[in-house]
Image 1: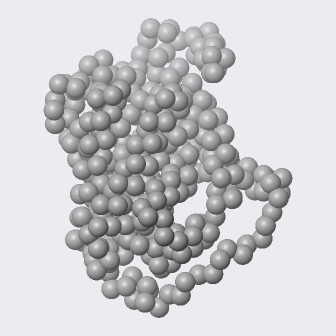
Image 2 (image 1 turned 60 degrees about the horizontal axis):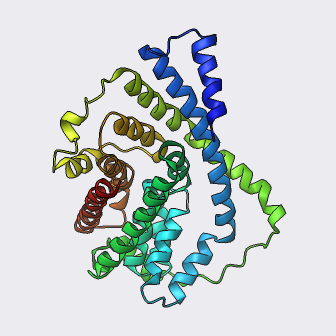
Length: 324
């Protein structure tokens, strides 16, 4: 699909700039230019498509549907799927979490959304397709949605509402159920310009993270010797996956920033499941998220939430390593 781009970048780096393909800088610059352009193209296209989906499934409508209908467990899958198609990182998902709780949606369903939203979104999917192909991307997206569904269901069994902060409990007591969505109905052609502007805005908002992440990945690609990472988190180390998750929690970044690094880790010999577990911990279990959650959750609830999600991420990492 991007053979033309590879040829163009090779001409730019090797013929025009004059770098040797066998040198560290030649390999690093080729990686940087090629992946930057490819990922930004894919990011806009996928974001544009997801924008169309979001335009027809607005937040208020989903929230009202979830709060008014009994789906016999399907509400966890629906909330997790909704989290996957919304362009929010872990920190920006927290305000939506508050809105869900105010809307009367059960805690487990709300947590299913909160788990999946930062892990699987159009940014991650676009970059994943460009780096690892469609098959791995589909497996990653399905596992992220499944992680949110099962995690939300398990957490919902614990009746965790009592561990919300007094502030949230007061908001819930005073809040009234919101009415049905009554926004202006636009035709498909009328929505497209706004969707395109929103997609371009998302690309602009993450482009710096993309370039920084790819820049780090390019330097690792060109200068870090093959096998360097295998010494620490190799397939032979049975504790590599939990170690990767523990290391990932303090290192907050969004998908755009961390995925290029993950690609190079895999190229350097780190098993894909271990690398994905590290990525999920970085973008889904971050210290900034925990800080924001203190407004709505007690420390006991934050610990339960982080611990449960960490366990499922570790299991996902082992599963990826077994099947990929």
